[in-house]
Image (cartoon, rainbow, N blue to C red; front, side):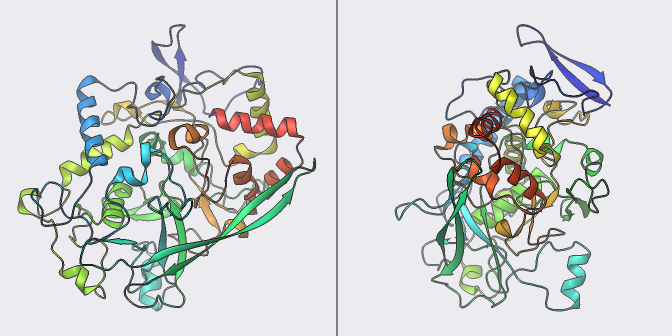
Length: 486
């Protein structure tokens, strides 16, 4: 059973009315928005002014008492960590190797990161994942049992840390080279796609293993994470069709991953390849891997330093008895996770505009909604009232899809192979230029606009890409207007 959000004329009072399913029982009416569509996060949707802070507001249905926890979580999210020892144990323990000194540094304004833009920029919101193929039966079995998502590179671990505290050596420096690929649309419009090639320079601890798999990952926007976690697992699994039994060309499948928190295999939902099962595990992994801060699930004060990086392991760390022999204890982590789960999705813009509705029709007719599933009703959850029983519109199935060789990174993660990616949620995507001042999309920011992002789709999405290429300029503009309105 799902629940449909009904809004009164003042847009203040909300009622939950049970309806039968999350998919329309009759063909969509493209002459007007669907009920609740303008509020993509349900009652948690915020209707505040659209500006650079549009991704930084709390769930609109949050109680005053819980707002205090949200603000405290925000403070820890913005905290700039320093190396140990320092004058305060509350904020020391950075690194010794790291990618950023705070969560906010990657997720600026709680939004989307960007690749380096010129020689004066840096790659703080884009880093490289690392792994190697399994070398023996034991490693292959660990992957089969989901005890590991990847096999770490023996010296450099699972990601390249390109910064280090004083007295330590950074692991290396990412280098990107772009090749421009011309594409001509059916109406004669000329588009150029930039194809990146990644390498690592100035390695600090010797060469990478020759078969190292490298994958760039850009910081995604943070809105709606708690709502995505609250989508019932059965609703997502009902969309999976790994054998394409319905012959629609789409074969989405779940990524089953090991949960350190729960000690069992769970459905992956977060990360570019759905490698994390919860906001908590994704957040704790970022604390450890990105900032080098020890947390309950990753208690090492040296972050991701490996035995081959002995200087890093021997460096002072911020683990202290005052904070449960950690640098960010459970209390801190809970506040940050609460903050992350309650970053509200903004209200839709121009949902009833004729051009937007025409673009919505094209979005469905072309087949984009096959992966970017529009809506769900979240599960009942008294522990997370803001996300409980909400009709939401994230435009994702959170499943893995083969997007073709053009986007392939050649790096498996869990059950995801080197050509598969999780369907990215589209809500809020059109506000990226306002919040973050750029229009870089996809897992590595290669796309310099939404049209380029669409034209990079291949594999299962190749028919949809080719259909977009055949559109007239007017239809193409309407399609983009719809996506920008989400």
